[in-house]
Length: 121
Image (cartoon, helix red, strand yellow):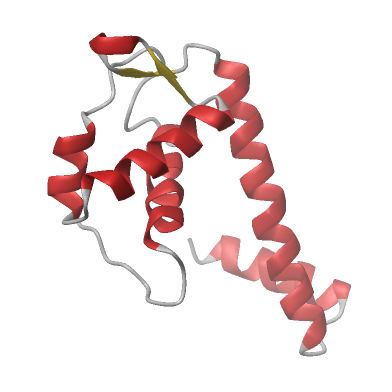
């Protein structure tokens, strides 16, 4: 796993974003045990406290479930994962559309560009 951090955003939030994405794309399956804080901190070259904070946020979102001394697990509740995926998709599309409109791209042009890009994929 390659970790690259942007100095403009707190590292813990960047970690949350990366791990959240890994969960929703299925890198970690529902119900699967999640790597330990120490293992993830080592891989990311961050302080374990930073990783602990990030994992705590993912627990708050419901994507991770703590089972005490056994460790953390990806939620088995597929609806939580799907809801998170939908929220990310909505936020991303909202940002892209807003940026397009800010530079003068009309709705029709935007749709045309999407169709053209689909043809090239």
